[in-house]
Image (cartoon, rainbow, N blue to C red; front, side, top):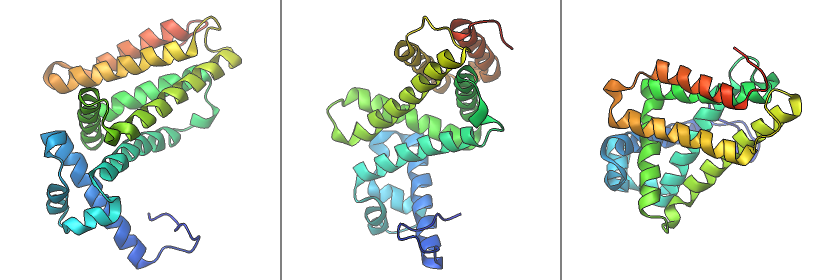
Length: 218
């Protein structure tokens, strides 16, 4: 569904068409990143794959850098939307929220649609490491910082509500959790046939539970 416009007026048919065009372009860009990597992502290829003119790519995103920024936001927004749609998410303890995020991450890897986003995210992570001074990758760093800060906040909340051990450093724990998730993402993309995500997800859940919990939980 198209969101209300920035002016507050109800969306028109033209707004819906514009949003549908933007969505096609984002999906095309995600697919190209997942299949052909960052070097394969060009404005022309995105337009061709989406079935629109190159000018439409520039209209919606201004440049390749703008397109990359939109992709990063889309990956994060889909993840957050899925989390918030979970029953009782807003009432979870800090520990439950951390485990929910971890579980949603593994679910996202296993599903065909979100799996494309996971692959695209890996491509962007590798590109950012290889080109650390490239300003086009700044949005990725910002979004990763935002996600890590969210996990930090969950851990701090867990300490406050008694579900997480008070002797832990929230920032360090959030960094370790992010590293675990990114490591699984890399290994899964390198050899998906040997990666049993359900078992790996359970092992990750148990490891995090053992590290964070103040007492045994199931």
